[in-house]
Amino acid sequence: PTNHLDMEAVFWLEDYLASWKKILLFVSHSQDFMNGVCTHLIRLNEHTKQLDYYTGNYDAYVKERKVRDEDQQRRYDAEQRDIAEIKDFIARFGHGTVKMVRQAQSRQKLLDKKLEAGLTPKPVADAVWDFSFPDPGELPPPVLMVQNVSFRYNDAAPWLFRNVEFGIDLESRIALVGPNGAGKSTFV
Image 1 (cartoon, rainbow, N blue to C red):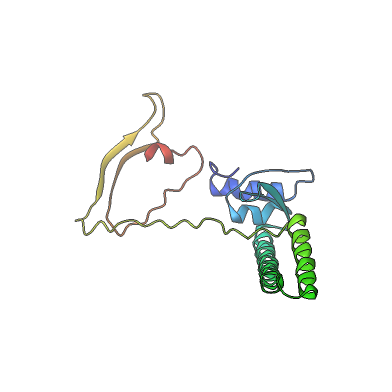
Image 2: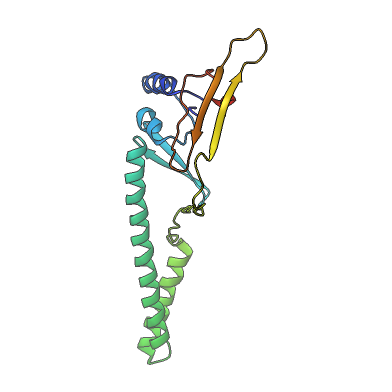
């Protein structure tokens, strides 16, 4: 809900929705916004194709999800160890004395029950994105030069900007800020 809002509007919306007394369901990529507004989170788990429910804001979700993932990994590891031990026992003693064969058959039944009941799925980590950009090398400043740029929608409209001049070099890190409707997107 915040993609096209200026910062003042985002803060207002966050305060307004944080005190909203009715149900509110929204999709957001802003962790700060979710921290200020959410009391519960629902994660669409891309691996299990199910919904996972969490109580609290975004920071609480991150902590709880880590705990759940670690618990799932421990259960998965324990089940895999148990299965390996049972299979090893069956392989070693399935062809020995009558007593050992019976024990191996009993362990096979135990293994079959475990498998039938369902095993803990192996946790799958979310994809990690790694972007790398090649070094452009040295370019002489200015890399981009803007001179005498003006804009208005028509002759009767006021100027959104007039006679703008600036230069950008490789060390520049620029944020274009202003309220909604000021002409930021038009300028770019």
